Amino acid sequence: MSNKISSSVPTDREVVLGILNNSEEALNKLYTGYFPMILQFILNNNGDEDDAKDVYQEGIIVLYNKIKSGNFELSSKLKTYIYSVCRRIWLKKLSQQSKKSGDVTDFDDLISVEEDVEQHEEKDRQFDKMQSALLHLGEPCKTIIQDFYINNLSMQDICEKFGYTNTDNAKTQKYKCLQRLKKLFFQS
Amino acid sequence: MRNEIELEGIIEDYLNGKLNEEEAKAFEQLRLNDPTVDHKVVAHKVFLESLNDYAAISDLKSKMNQVHGQIDVDTLSRQLGPHPSFIVNIWRKNKAAIAVAASFILLTVVTLYSIQQTTQQSGSVELVSRELAKIKNSQSNLIRKINSTNVATPNLKPANFGGTGFALTSNGYILTNLHVVADADSVYVQDSRGNSFKAVVKRKDSQYDLAILKIEDKSFSSLPSLPYRLKQNGIGMSESVYTLGFPKDDAVYGQGYVSSKTGYNGDTTQYQVSIPVNPGNSGGPLLDDDGNIIGVISAKQNQVDGATFAVKSKYIQEALNSIPNDSLGRKVAFSKRSSLQGLSKHKQVNKIKDYVFMIKVYK
Image 1 (cartoon, rainbow over the protein chains, first blue to last red):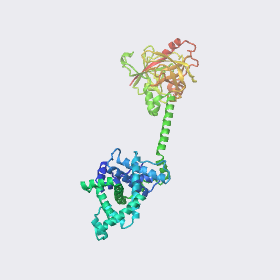
Image 2 (spheres, rainbow over the protein chains, first blue to last red):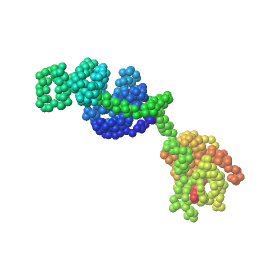
Image 3 (cartoon, each protein chain N blue to C red):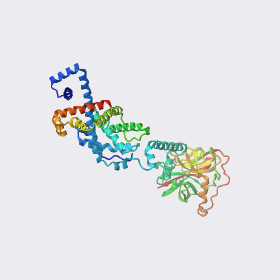
Image 4 (cartoon, rainbow over the protein chains, first blue to last red):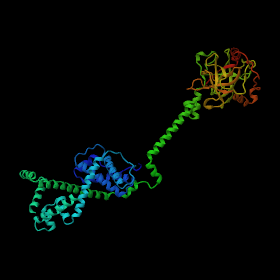
C-alpha cells in the first residue's frame, strides 16, 4: 500500500503494562496508534468511518479483555493481533449484512483469533442484555443501581443523593430495583 | 421482605468477601442446607459479574469515544480510503495478479531472448555493443607477437608484431590485413627464402580490414607472374580451402572448408572458415582447390572452435579498384586463368609459397 501509516505507535510492552495498570494514557496511545490501520482496512472493504469506529472499538475491547484476563501472551505483534481481530469482526459483520466478503483487501499479516472473537461475541451479548435491561429499568432505579454497583457509592451517599429519609428506605428501594433488573436481565 | 433484603445483603457481602470467617462458614452451611439460597447466590454472582463487565466495557467505550473525538477521521479517511480513481483502485486491488502477469511476461521475454541467444552463433560477444564487439574482434585478430630470438634477419631489430601477406602484383604490391600494419612505425616483409625487404603502407581500407603494402627496397626484384587469380564470384559452403601463413618463422600450411557464407555476427563481407589458424595467420591468402584466392584470413572467434573469418575476395577486388591506378604504377591484373588449376596441392603450395610474405611490424 502506498499510504504508510505514520502515526506514532507505542511499544507493545508499554501498552500491555498500561492496560494492566488502567492507564488512560496507554489507552490513548493505543487507540490513536492503530486506528488508521483499521480505518484503512474498513474503508477499502465496503465500510465507512462509523463502521471503522465500531469495529475498532470492539477490537480494542477484545484486546482489553484478553490482557485483563491474564492469559495474554505476546505471541505476535500487537498490531497483528488487533488487525486480525478487527478483520474477523468486520468479515462477520459483512456476511451478516450479506455484502460481499469473499475477497478482502488486506493490509497486514494475520493470525488466528477465532477463539478470542467468539468469546468476545458471548460477552458482547451479555453486554447488550445488560444494556437493554438497564434501559427498560427506568429512573430512578437505573441511577441507583449504577451509583451503587458501578460508581461504588455507599448506601449513605445514595440516601442523601435521592433524599431518602433513612438508609433502610434506600436499601429497600435498591433491593426492589435490583430484583426488577435481575428479572429483566435473566428473562431477556 | 425484610429478611430477603438482609439475605441479599449477606449474599453480596459473601460474594465480595466481606464476611468474616465465622459468618462465611455459617453462610456456606446455609447454602448447603437451603438450595433456594444457593440458587440465589449463583444467580447473583452471575448477575454481578455481568454488571461489572458491563461497567468496565461502558467505561472503556466512553474513554475510547473521548479519544476518538480527538482523531481527525476525515483527513485520515481521505488519505487511507479507496482512491477515487478507477484505475488506481484496479491497481491496488489486483496488485498481486498484475505482479504475477508482469513476472510471467518478464520470464517469457528472458526465455525467448536466451533461446535466440543460443541459436545465434556469436555467444557472449553479441551481447556487447558494436564498439565493444569491435574491440573483442580485434583481440582475436591473428597478429603474432614475434619472439625476438626467432628473428631470421639478425641485422634488423626484432619486430614486434607479425602477420602474413601475399603478392597482388609481380612488382611488389602486397595485400594484408589492416590490423596487422595498423599504427606501425615501419613494416618489413620477408619472403620464403628469408630475404627481408622494407615496405610502406600504400593503402588502408578500414571497412574490410585490408591494407596494401608496396615493397620499396632496392634489393627487391620483380617476381615472376602470379600463379593464382582472384576468384570473382563467391564460393559455396563445404568447399575445401587452404591457406599459407606465418604463425612462426616458416610458412605453415593449413587446410579446411568454408563453413558459412557469412562471417562474425552475420557479416556478409566475410566467410566463416573452419581452418586451424594461429596468431600470425592474419592477412594470409585463402585459396580453393584450383588455386583461386577466395579471401584473406582476418580473424577467429575466441569462444568458438574452428570459426575463422576471411574477407571475401570480392572485397579485395573492391579495395583494389578503389585505389587510383597511377598509385599502383600499373593496373593490377590477375591472370584470367589460374596456372595452378589441376595441380596437386603439394605443387600448388610450392608455387605459391614464393608469393606469400611474412609481415614484420615495428611499433
